Length: 412
Image 1 (tube, helix red, strand yellow):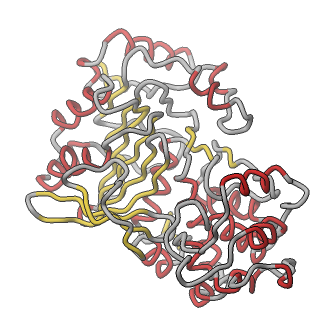
Image 2: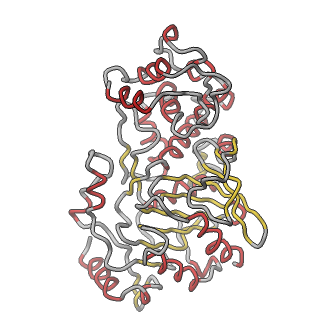
Image 3: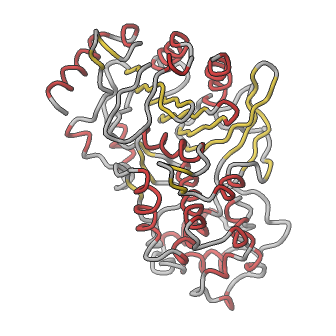
C-alpha cells in the first residue's frame, strides 16, 4: 500500500460511518481498504488452522461505503449508483445497518447493474485485495469449469446424460455396487447421484489417502455406497461435485487444476485466489476455495452476460441456461438467507434458484451460495448482481435483496 493510499485509509477510519457514505473526501476518491503486509500473507484454506487465522484478522475500525467505486487495475467495469439511477441514500442506509451487525457478520457487499460495479462496501474482515473463503460457492465455480470444457469442445451437452463411468477408464467396474452405472453427469450436477454412505464411512474413506488417489476416489465411493436405485437418486446435498471434477480431469488436456487456472480464472484475470487440492490429488470441488469479492463479481458478470467476457465466449450459453435454472425443486422449508419474500427454492447445476417478490410480482433469482454467508446472486429481470461475503451462517441476504435492494433497482 502506498503512503498516499495509507493516508486516505487513515482519513476514512477517522471520518466514521455516517460521513463515509460518499466514496470521496473533497475531490479525492478514497481507496477501498487493503490488507496489511501481515494480513496479505494469510492464504485462506491452505492450512488446517486457516479458519482460526481468518478470525484473527482485525476488524476494520469503520466501514468503507462507496457509491462511486474506484477504478483499480483489475479490468472490472465500473459505474456509479447515480448513473444507474439507484437511490444512493437508501443503499447507504442499508450498508450502515449491515456495518452495525444488525443482519449478521458481513465482510463485504458489492452491487452491479447493467454489467458494471456501481456500489462497493467492506466491513469487519473485508479487504479489497484479500481473498475470502468461499465454502460451497466453490461448487458453482466447479460448474463453470465444466461449462468451459463444453464450450471448448472437450464435452458436449449430450454428455450430460451419459454415465460418469463412461469418462473414467481407470475405475474397475467389477468391484462396484449395483446401479453404479446409473449415475450420469447430470445426476452429479444436480446432486441426485443416489450415493448412500454413512458419515463414519466417508470419514474412513477420506483418511485412506492411498486408496482415493485420482479415480480411486470414485472407485472407493462406488464400492462403499449402498446400491444405487431409482428411489435413492433423489436430491442429497454434498454428493456430486467430486464426480464432476473427476470428469473435467479426465477430458481436458493436462490437469483440471491447470485448466481452471488458465481457461476459467485466467481468462477473467483472477489471480489472487487459492484453490486447495483434495486428498485425491485433484482440485477440491465442493469447498475450500478463496476468492476476492471483486473477483466473485467478475464470475457473476460472466454468467449474467451469457458466458461472455471481453467479447469472448468462455462458457457454453446452452449449458449456462440449464445450470442456472431449477432442474429440481428442493422446497421452501430451509431457504438459505430467505424470508417471506423468497420462495420456490430449487437447484440447477450447483446453482440455487428462488423467486423473490417485489410489488406482488415474483422475479427469478439464482445464486452461488457458501456457508458463512457467501453469495453471488443474480436477478436477470433487472440485470442485477449482488455479491456478499460474510463469516456467519445465519443471515437474511436473499430477503434483504428482495426487501431493500430490488425496490430501488426497479424504481430506477
